[in-house]
Length: 321
Image (tube, rainbow, N blue to C red; front, side):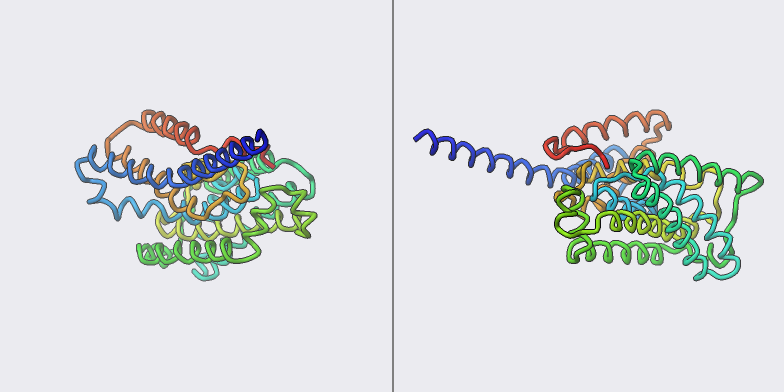
């Protein structure tokens, strides 16, 4: 009798946990809708009227966040994305004066090379991902400031003339669709989730975890290199602050989207889309209200803490790899 009672109690507990997990998965979407409605009311409807302007700010974040999403799914972090964006944007600008398609390839290659540096020290030298990427963040930030010390690096006229929402939207959709298909329907996504859930178990399952981790950092760098093309098309040149704070924006966006900090099986590709939209809507709404930068950062910090407290699955948290 006692055993039956325990079994029933255990079953009820599992159902409760499953229900809580389901509710938590819908909270980011509900948060996005709530934040959009609140800011639309506070701005007197300007949020809807200026949707094209709001959406024009999301393309770079969405593309770059896709690569970081893959890294976080396997339990890693990357704080060098802003520096990768700055370096690859400079490369795109320089090479665009020769040939625009070649500039896109050069930006992707430069991003992949920096990602390979991150991957090498993370995988081969066994240094924690957040330490490696913080070091490369400062290293390449210094190079960016050196290259732009005299004047901003400008792109070619042909590149600037490509600044059309249709092109930027198409580039973003291509990355998102390919990323979604690869993550959801191929072994690539399965391997990432397996490594995030437990690297030792993944090794026993036959997954070459070291090779996979290295390639993911290369891939993330390459994706950001492609995002640099979209960034340069939009801004036309690169200054010493190029890509500054991008890594923070991406990490906040992913967490706002419900991304589990430790990665694993609970990572969902919609975390990228919902989180990026939520971050941009929040930032744009605060800007439309005419708040100072300090006030905006304060409010963003409070909202970020609230979302982390609500969305974080404390039972799945573990030390970041």
